[in-house]
Length: 146
Image (cartoon, rainbow, N blue to C red; front, side, top):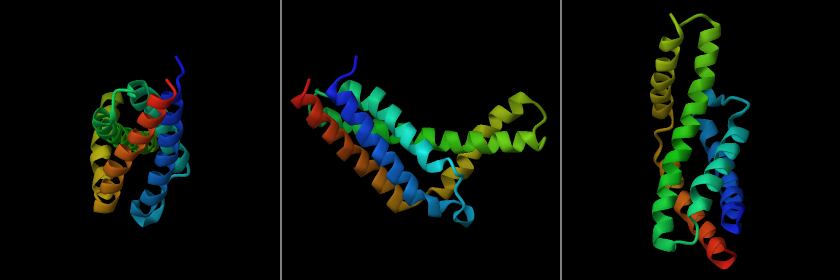
């Protein structure tokens, strides 16, 4: 059921995902991010804001802090998964895997490789603090307009 909390969470986290995608472009090898990187992060933020943060809005600001950290983990995991899945498809088209299971396992090893690229204090701090702030904004709208 659509609520103001869900709408606020979707919009706020979509903007936050776009922002995170923008500041993480320089962390890619040779600062060459895929073309889909910014829209994919915004879409991931939209889904996470609607499903995770927006559905839990209205429980108080202390609970929103935990929800914000949950959203931060989900946003980071999904962004790594999307970029690793894209790289796996590229590798599979070049016949670098022996079979489908090797390709699926390759996604998670690629996620670890990309996680090393994104190991930056500024990015991680922005992700954690920004997600909590976005969750507080979502909580504000969830309480005011139930």
